[in-house]
Length: 110
Image (cartoon, rainbow, N blue to C red; front, side, top):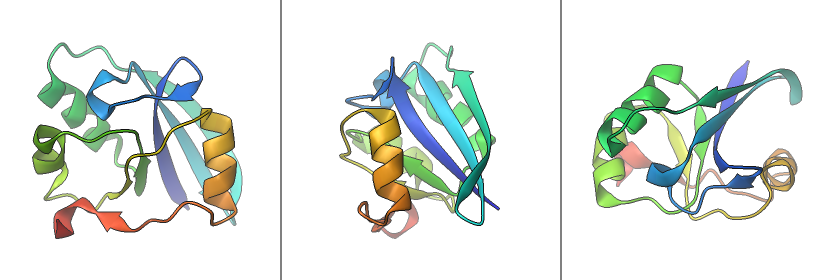
């Protein structure tokens, strides 16, 4: 199983990870969605927000812009981050499944 997290604002990928108000968590089994949850992010500070995402323990995080603060906080995790992504969250997820988004950036390797 693989857990994919998408940082969202309404139904789109949030322009910046620290401005996301929800995280869409999709659990995949054999490249098919087995479970879908939307988690509301309430923490007031960007660091608390990133910590909440880390605690969700996704394998992949698809997000928009990534500040240095967010990058540093994610640095010692095993989360593969696909940053600088934009568009409708459903469309972006389909692109990810089709291999059109790359899992090219692992924050721990910055």
